[in-house]
Image (cartoon, rainbow, N blue to C red):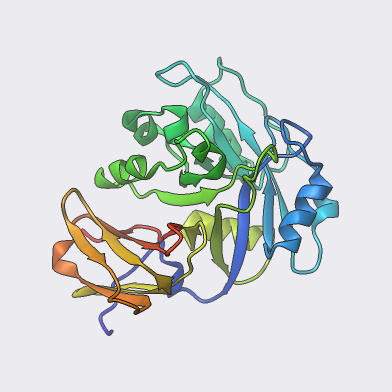
Length: 299
C-alpha cells in the first residue's frame, strides 16, 4: 500500500487515540427530561469519553461534569434566521465560551461567523427533518458539516440526511458527516448515534481541532478500523459487517461488498478507477446499523 494519497479528513492517517463522543444532547435546562448531572452520568457509564451539552439557546455549565477519562464540552443548539420553508435554522455549536441566542431576525451566516470567532465548531443539525434545501446548505460558510444521522429525528422517519450530504459533496464542497442521538430522554433516543474522534489527547482543544479537521467517523454501532485511498484502490477494514459500500459521485462508486455464506465481512478493496470527485465508506452490520467514514476528495 505505497503511494498513499494525501487524505485530509481521514482519521486513520493521523496518530492519536480514539474517543467516543456524544455531541448533540439536551437536558432539563431546556427541553430534556434529565438534569446535566444525570445525562453526564449516563454517557460516562456507557463507555463515552466526550459529551457536549447542547441545550437550546443557552450554554450549560460543565466544569463539574468532567472527570478522569471523561470530558464535558460546553455547547448549544441555536436558531438564527429562517429557511426557505420559514423554519428557523438549527445550528449545533460546541466549544463556545459564552451564551449565544438568536432569533428569526438574525442572519444565519452572521451567527456562524460569531460562533466561530468565539472558538466554536459549528454544524447544521438534521437537515432532512428541518427541510433545508441544497442551495441553502451550500450557501452556509464556516460549518464543518451536517448530521447524517439523528436518532431523535428517526422517530419521525427523517433521521438520515445522507442524500443532503452527497449532494453537497457532489458540488465539490468538503463536508463532514456526524451521527448524533439528539437525546431528549422522552424515549429511547440516547446512545444511538455518536462519532469516534481521533485526537492526541482528551482535552477540549484537541477534540475541537480533530472535529474541525474531520478526524472522526460517525456510527450507530459498527467500527471502522481503516480507510486508505491510494492511486489504485480504496482499502477498508471494519468490525464484522454484512455490507461494505464505497460511495462516490452519481452512479460511480463501488458495488457493495457482501460476505459469502457464513463468512464475516471485515475488509474490502474497491478499484479507484470507479470513483469520481469524492469517496466515502459505509459499513453496515447484521442489525442494520451503519458507520460512515468522512469523505476524501479525489479530483
